[in-house]
Image 1 (cartoon, rainbow, N blue to C red):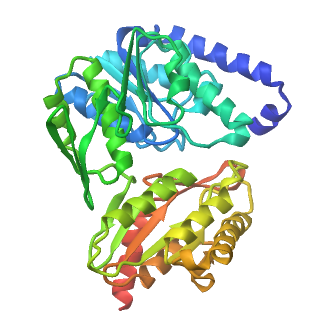
Image 2: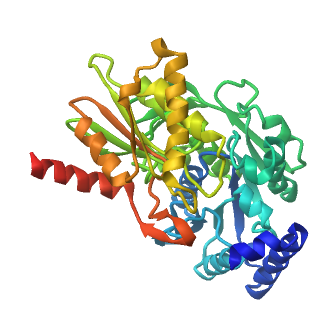
Image 3: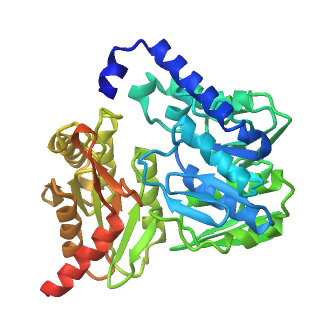
Length: 434
């Protein structure tokens, strides 16, 4: 019924409906954002991690915080897993959350702000004090119509906030976000020497990153250059609120992992990593990070489990994900991942088509061969196959769902799911059988 109404209701009426609902939500709860300092994090990747890191910095500085991310909800010392399968909740839920944050004495609320949320006016009637731009790469193109419109949608958050703008100066879209007026603009980066906060002396380890900011050494237990950028965004958020750099350092060094983000589930005899990567850019960065930090003294194979979501979302990326997997992995297992109402096997075939095409076009540059491409519908079986194939020193990388709690299937149904628990279950099964 809900989909029927959406299909036959003019878009301008739906937009007005979302806007009016946002207003009445804020009105009903007494415009709670006016009693907090609200930080909005937007971009294609890294939002959840930046939310978590920024919250830890502010907490270490002595503030009470609340936040919403695709990983969890947190108000002061109470938290719960985000099981909505929605990064940015609806308008009434957000206003109720902010109201609870006020009642619990929080001074800051940190929100992931998505392009879909902006299209549905979920950010309206929230007074943002700080907005952060992490990065931008093609995503939700079918929903927005073009990459430019996708970027414009993200830009609406910056247009609405006139106070503090924090921008990744290394991203090629930085200039677009710098055009919006603000009382203060803080930039960060690694390569652009004009960045206000710039990391130097960078060392990427197998499960960590170290770097210098103004001669202060940071050592964080999150791998990859992308996590360095996430840390810089969070540091800038803290600095914008007068938090000392040493406090930022102390806060970040407390963090051991991000659930479902390059999370190591098994370390021996082979390594198993679960990550949320579901866009071409993020998938490539995960593979490159693992290759760059693997032990060069030992032969390491990479066994990759991936898929692509359904629901008509970004169909263009399916063969691209397959191409990236074929270029980087020794063995590729393509499986089901949130098919919604689409035929899951058709999605798998589209991803496989990209992988096989890449092998045909660039056989010398692909560690993977046609015989090492597997199409397995059941995700549990696919994970079991990857674990069974793994030998000592291999790396199994399972991407697409991270710490998500559900598998979304036809007619709006959701089945309980957790890649991490499935890994543990399948490993126990293998041990019992051997």
